Length: 259
Ligand SMILES: NC(=O)c1ccc[n+]([C@@H]2O[C@H](COP(=O)([O-])OP(=O)(O)OC[C@H]3O[C@@H](n4cnc5c(N)ncnc54)[C@H](O)[C@@H]3O)[C@@H](O)[C@H]2O)c1
Image (cartoon, rainbow, N blue to C red; front, side, top):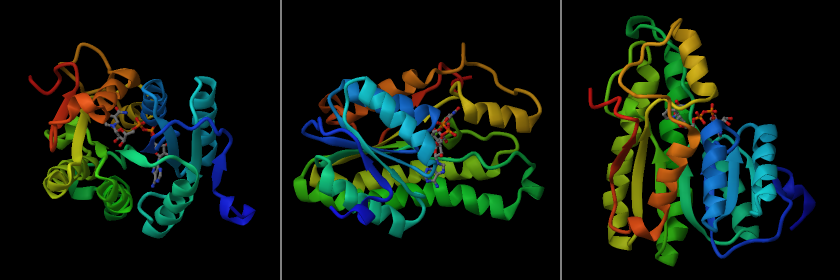
């Protein structure tokens, strides 16, 4: 591979296993935990994030834990940039059998009558369009090989309202709709597309939302989820044990949505 083609791709480790998992938003709290959990299950990692420094840090942790991976920097909502990154990854990494659509942004907190349209569009672009772009990139290869699964990280905001979070809640409902539709489309090819619906998870995103909301309005769950609680569900859905689970909405929220 020519060096200029490698500009956004960093391959530091060649201890590849037989198959790869592509995790978007891999530099964030949840993406990092998912990547490290999948390493334990024998997956090599293709790590994608818009934030190169954070993504490099995840790669270092993957390597420290004995795994192999490559990073690339791209905005998931940019189909061209995603396509370039994917074709680079396919040249160096083992076949991508898992896609974890985890990249996401929370937008702002404001009542629906004054929620900024630009923020709404930005949230929609990353959370919904980004998931579609990544599926459109990865699914043809999975269909060709007859193997693969997609895990879309939605949220309990896919099945409930949350005050002040119009963009985020609408986008996560859409991610669930996209998941259910994609599941039907891929089922004849032996593939699966599922959604994970985490409740609030300890980390930067929930801190930003709480700060914008000026306090915490949260009830029901015994505690915040830890990123590993969510990563365990992603690992299960990525495994053959989940072979008959398709189009599902797997809630991981410590009972917050059953109130
Ligand atoms: N944290 C929670 O409480 C919680 C709860 C439910 C669902 N989720 C979902 O989990 C996912 C991960 O959240 P997190 O808590 O790790 O957030 P985070 O902010 O820690 O990480 C998000 C990561 O996504 C990356 N990203 C953002 N926009 C991108 C883009 N356009 N292209 C590529 N990368 C981009 C960021 O750089 C960041 O590294 C999100 O989809 C979020 O909606 C989070």
